[in-house]
Image (tube, rainbow, N blue to C red; front, top):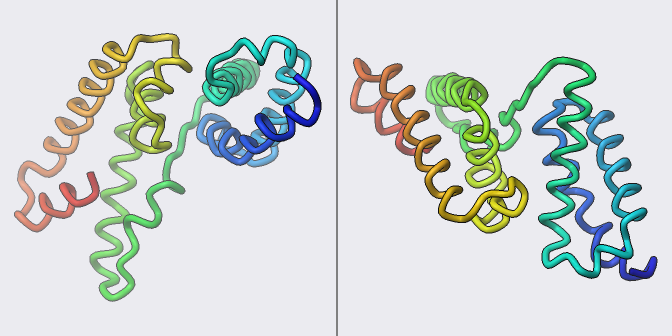
Length: 181
């Protein structure tokens, strides 16, 4: 792969890789460093990139591994998905509703963050990042069927946790949660 091909096929992924790295690291500077390290690794492997079917999926996998390596060195894990949900909770016409939705979203984020692997990663990549089952499978090394099963189980766990929180709530509470999900 030439430098020109690298610049047209790999470099445009930088924003997506940064957002993905930020989900793991929750630190902009460390996320930038992780993406930079990923680009160095990809550049060093540029001859092999021509044989890879999906460069984006491969780059995401390398980013994930880089972030996990960085997390191991600092011994903490944080995957705050709050930034992805901010647009869904804004209701400026009703501050009380906005506060309720914000609180509900924090509870949802907490539930997602407590999921075990690979449930957390699959629900993050599929429902938050918007990757297809095939792309998630490529990154995690699982078949599409396995991804569907893991995603279904992850969603079920989230749904059950939310139901426990809101089982005694009003119909309005349940409709707001349904709207968020």
